[in-house]
Amino acid sequence: MTPPSALLTSTVREKVSKAKSGSCNCSSSSSATTELDAKIQERIAKHPCYSEDAHHHYARMHVAVAPACNIQCNYCNRKYDCANESRPGVVSELLTPEEAAHKVLVIGGKIPQMTVLGIAGPGDPLADPEKTFRTFELIAKEAPDIKLCLSTNGLMLPEYVDRIKALNIDHVTITINMVDPEIGAKIYPWIRWQRKRITGIEASRILHQRQMESLDLLKKADILCKVNSVMIPGINDQHLSEVNRVIREKGAFLHNIMPLISAPEHGTYFGLNGQRGPTPKELKALQDECADSNMKMMRHCRQCRADAVGLLGEDRSLEFTKDKFMDMEPEYNLTVRQVVQAGIEQKQEALKEKKNQLKPVAKVVNSPKILIAVATKGGGLVNQHFGHAKEFQIYEVDANEVKFVGHRRVDHYCQTGYGEEATLEHIIATISDCKAVLTSKIGHCPQGELQKAGLEVVQAYDAIDTVARGFYSQYLQTQVA
Ligand code: CLF
Ligand code: SF4
Image (cartoon, rainbow, N blue to C red; front, side, top):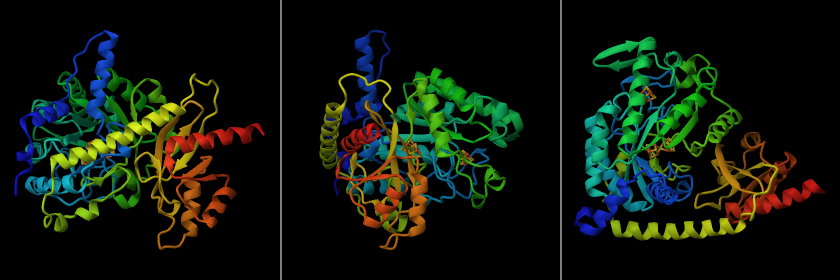
C-alpha cells in the first residue's frame, strides 16, 4: 500500500506545514491587526476546542499514551484518566506510540473531519515525554494535515517548548487552578520535582512558577495557549477571576473554566470529603464575569476522556477499542480528507451568511435575554430527536445575538425505545431555566410534560440561529400581549 505521506506533493506539504504552524507578526496598525486576526482564525478554524464554531463540524481524537504523572491534584484518582482534561472516573486503554499512530491513520480515514490529535493523558504527557513526542513524530510524518495538540499541568513544560515548536504543535493547554500558592496548597498535596517529592505550599510555589514561565515561553514561541481551570467552590471560585487576569496579561489565547465533578465513588480526596462542584448557574456567572474582561472563554468543553474520538458532544471511542482498530487497515487519504473538509467549509459559509442576514442592522438596547435548550447532532443545526439527546446545548438569545453559553448532560429519554418518566423529570429539572426546547421531533407525551413545566417546544429542522430567532420573536409578542 502507498504510505499516505507519499501521496503529498511538496507544494501541498508546504501549504499544510504553513497552515499548521501559522505565523503572526505583531504590529500596531489596524490593517495589521485585521490580518493578525485572520491568521489566528486560520489557525483555529478547524480546532473544535479553540473555535466554538468548529466544534459543530470538526472532530478531535485523543490517544492515551502517557500514563505517568508528576503531581497530585485533590480531584484526581490515578486509577483513572487525568481529570484536568477528562471526566473523573474514566479509564482509557493505554497504547504504545506505534499503536497510537496506527489508530490515528485508521480514524483519519474513517472520520475525515477529524482534524486534531490531542495527547491529554491518562497522566501528564510531559511526565512521560518520550512516549508523547514519539507519538507526535509518527503522526506528523504520516498524517501531516492533522493538527497536534498537547495538554499538561505545566510542571515540565518549560523544558519542552522548543521541541513542541519544532514539531509544529500549535495548540498547548495548561491547567492553571491558582496564581496564589496558599490556594494551591489546598488543591495540590505534592509534586515530584528534581527527583524529590515536595509537599505543602512549596509544592504549589514551584508549580506556579513553572506554569508562569510556561506561559511566557509559549507566547514567545507564538504557540496558541489555552488555560483550563477547575472551578472548586469555596477553594478557588473567588480566585479564578484573578487567574483569568494573570493569564490574559501573559498572552493566553483562551480560558476554559470547567466545573469540578466530584463524587465519593471516584475515590478522590475531594470526592471522599464531600467537596461539591459548582452549579451550572455558578459556573456561568464566573464565565460571564471573565468574558467581560475581554478574554475569550471556552464554554463548550465536554471534559473528554484520554482516548476520546468524535465531535465534542459525541463519544465514538467504543467503536475504536484496541481489539477493533488493530484489525482495521489505515484508510487515511489526504485528498479525500481535503475534499470532505472543503464541503464542510462551504456549509459553514452558508450558515454564516444566513446568520448575518438575520442580525439586526443596529444594536437593540435593553433587549431581554432568555435561555433556550437545543437538541443537536452537530452541523450547527436543530437536527436531533428529543428522545435521543444525551445533552442539550444552551443558547442565550436576545434581539442582537444567539450565543452559545454551555451544554447540559442528560440521560436520553428513549433509552429502551419507550420514554422513561424519571428521566423526563430529570431532563425538565436540568433545563428548567430555559424558555424553550428546540428539537427536530418529539412525542406528544414529553411535549405535554415540558409545556406543563413552562417550556415551549419548537419542532424544526434548520439552522439553530434561524429557529432560535424565530422563537424569540414569538416569545416577545407573547410578553407584549
Ligand atoms: Fe484534546 Fe484538549 Fe487538545 Fe481539545 S480536548 S487536548 S484542547 S484536542 Fe477540548 Fe476535551 Fe475540553 Fe479538552 S473538549 S477536555 S478542552
Ligand atoms: Fe491527575 Fe492530571 Fe492532576 Fe496528574 S495532573 S494528578 S493525572 S488530574
